[in-house]
Length: 367
Length: 226
Image 1 (tube, rainbow over the protein chains, first blue to last red):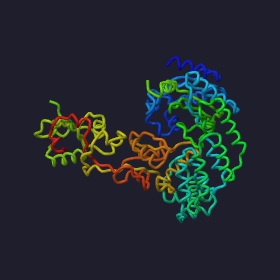
Image 2: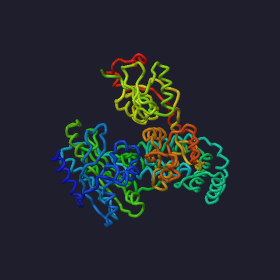
Image 3: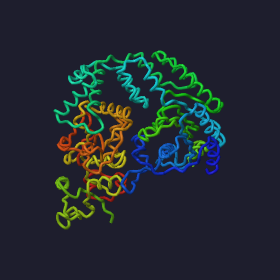
Image 4: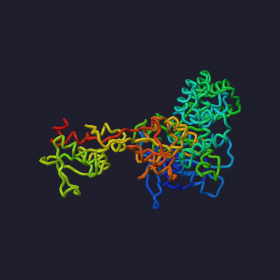
């Protein structure tokens, strides 16, 4: 494996940047905020001398992002290699070493995304991977479609909350389609007749009179707005079946470059006109498909839930022998979220998993 | 000669209730060193090693295969592993030590009646403030499983060492998952149980480790639980 690692590393690092040593221990609360509880049982935890909970880094991106937040530079490219720590999954014997690139900058053109995948693909080919599949997606696609679709605002909000989770989104589409009008509760109805400000005051008064506690995170205004939204939803007509079917079909769309055209045509049925956006998706697809060549099948998926939710733009995964060899994408919002709004940067990154590459070269068998 | 290891809670009402139950099976508990002693045995029975442990130690011991039989709370057993039925067999539900593991939110959340409401609130919190709903609990596994069933993803567990009911008031979490008998402590801390927020109706159970059962020596327990 050391040879494979060197081959992969030398090619990947042609992307450009500075080799960096990243911390192995990260604040557990930050990691869990990003990954959610689904990853908790695979993480390794400990405590520092103050009792603060830490975990061994489950990937290199979060570690690089935290390092960048502390750095003085406004732009930085990291060339990184090192262990990540996740207890073993089902198909991978030892997922513990990654090679990666993370680039944070104030401006980034689309060509950097293509160059990133180019280096990853070259590295895999040099290592001996002769064929496989590249799955492309976009973490912001469904959000963009829902936001701009000509559907009732009640359902727009309802669906937007689940745009990152295809299963949840489909569930919500079904609920919206099958919705039956109901009578809102008396308080909900009364609030729905008031302005947001008046409704907030009413709720604050009710809570005060009844001596009810709401805690520090939510406010009377949050509760008032939600009660108003519930009233609106209770009285709303169901999402028209045609609109639900169109959105459902978009979520399920995957395939070659024609799938992007299909998504665009379906979006037009929801009165979405954004030809430039879809043109960019197609151009990306074509450029990557050309780099991949005939031995790598390139596919676009409208809805793809990544292991980590921070991807909010283009995303890719490269697999062979049904094993995930490399992945990456754009995550422009991550620095802002992790820094609590103190720092922002555009960001792209990718990782290769050398042990999985070796496994794929062995025909998918462990060891 | 190897003995079957049997554990019961070491103190409190639960211990008394266990002793009464076991006496009904012909197993009379006797303690060395009086009531404060931690060494015990079954009167007239030589082939069982009786141990007095805390309920959590019993659950842990059953899951790890350190003891053969134990009486402990079902909540503690199910919190200790994902696949209880593959590791241990619950022979009997004993009808005492009853308590519910529930989801509780601040009583001022008048817009939250059920888990579907909680799902929405968590999604709104994530979308508007960029943070996950914090859930203070000692029952991380049960919480995860329950929240997954209700399609709630935008949350984070805050491990509670004790006084879980005080977590929202102290700003440690927004909501809690905790065990309750009457609900009085929850009310006293301005919390309410949401409509479909019952995770587990727990009680004391008598369980046996399955792996140890395959090679356990014959004992009085084998006669009682064939």
